[in-house]
Length: 113
Length: 115
Image 1 (cartoon, each protein chain N blue to C red):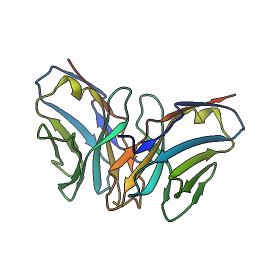
Image 2 (image 1 turned 90 degrees about the vertical axis):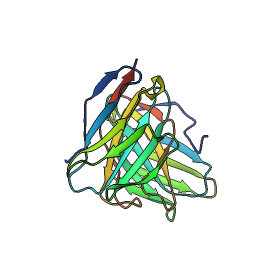
Image 3 (image 1 turned 45 degrees about the vertical axis):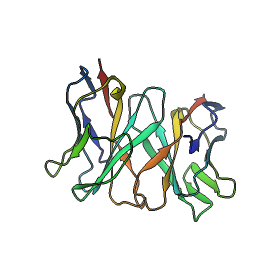
């Protein structure tokens, strides 16, 4: 059951460059998508979200893009900083649910100085 | 910044024992959740709680599990008779509103080890 897929287990980027993290989903009932960042021994920290009625949402260095026809979303971080090194989770919520989220497996981002 | 706090950070118990995991959600939040992450696997939804009752639960959340908000601040997850496969990191989360209108905030988790 892989309704939310993050196909890249890891990504390495140079400081100052753009990081692009990808996420695909299969469930057409998903209407709200979130990105979380997680450091070891901590809980997931909310980063940014997007509703299915939008195709882009921006918050500072973070931008999420949603392509509903392709069932694909991406998180862009620019410029990347060493402190961004963490595991990034994509999560999706079904229409009508509260926060019953379905998570991807995560992508480990390493930003090298 | 207000945060969700969970205790203990690590709990070791023997198979068949009852455990209670404790959480203090953010004080003005109204929606409460438990998630878990088995080592190497995805974060999985267990249960959501609003207005003193369960609003949604997953297949994982069977009769061995229960949740309670015993007072105005704590939110607990009880596992009645633990199994080896219950070993996981358990995350409590809370939100001000449902339906995704405010972010879901997670605690740092309780690592449950069942031996």
